[in-house]
Image (cartoon, rainbow, N blue to C red):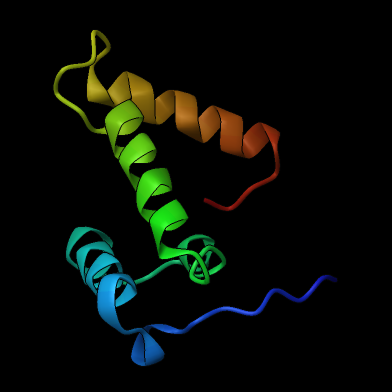
Length: 82
């Protein structure tokens, strides 16, 4: 198994601390899929913006439940727990 150095929530500073705080507000915790991107907060922020734009944006032509169902099917197909 590969090891990826990460910055845990209790050690985050600056922009990363703000990103983590937003994650906690949104999901109740900072999932490891976010922490694995912690060494590059700018990339993490861009990743989160893309995720939110495709899954939760009210501007989508698909209802949110359909977008979330698609995400579940893709995750299951990829054997991903997220």
